[in-house]
Image (cartoon, rainbow, N blue to C red; front, top):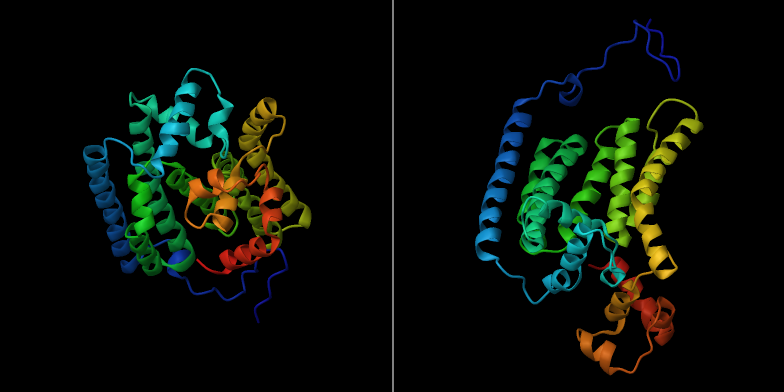
Length: 316
């Protein structure tokens, strides 16, 4: 009779061998091969089509979200290239996106073209990450379906074409998540890389902070390796160290310029979502409201604020 494996150790030679699956055997099956071919072909066609579309038709920004690029992000990127930081360009977000635009512009592009290229590269990376992550978790068929749905999503296409923080943020968030989830037992290097990307996501948009509790839950509550709880704590600490290493430079800069590492004006967007009723100018410039903090937003109408927050939590 086969001897059961010791807890935390290897099975003895007498244990019946488990049947090999496609994932465990390391030999891709036919479905794996053809779905992979279709997936990467779709990503290549997407990149080629939108590359031509972006760089031939989209020569100047639109009146919508791209006004933020002309107003803040482009100026911030140009300043960074000259070693300057004008803190007024960072009222609601950190330097993660302008720094990336500045880096891409070193290829000889102006900042708007660099932003376009960054959006396109981020979209391609996001598509590849979604496919690979879903393939490892859910199988090749579901992965292909999710990729095709993503590449045809209206919001995804808009953010591929337009210049802004959205697609870049989406790509680095996906990369951070993928490093933790693609394998049941991620390496220390993968954990550290995930933390670094998480910190850069936070420096791009402050809501990237959601990655921190999510990563800690993954590393502390989900079994990722044999061994004592101390090992899980070390892994969670490794992720946090990576996060802080990427986020701290911006937090220090923000603190030096404003006196608070977390200074930002995102409460304005919250107020508009609750009370704006589709008219930004009327709410912020014609209502006579004193709005200097999130507390002011809540105090304006606590009941309405609470009901809108609850509604937005459970509806799209």
